[in-house]
Length: 129
Image 1: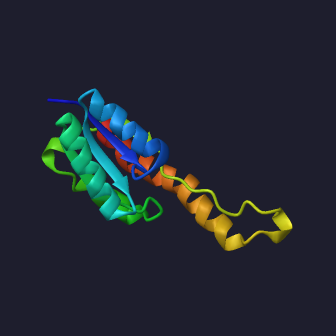
Image 2 (image 1 turned 90 degrees about the vertical axis):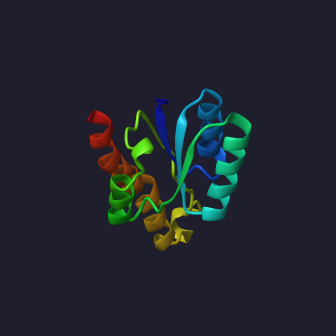
């Protein structure tokens, strides 16, 4: 059985590049992100180019319960996660501090910090087992 890699933020940038690189080496992929159409498009392309199995997972890493349920309900062929690329993130609130929008700071912290923790907390016990 091929190894499984779980990649968050897989619809663009580093996450997408990682998905292609791991697919090229034969990994089974769980690609997660907030844009379902992009996930499905990438999954089809990865399967077509590399013949790998891809599970597209619509996921908002800021929603702890959603993350936990998604990991607990992975299909059997994807339940043994070997590699986690915990990449989901965004950049907001980059203006000078006095001009910044605190709601953007909250969104960025929720995604970049709490999202990282939510996914790690859900996936690490699976990896350890």
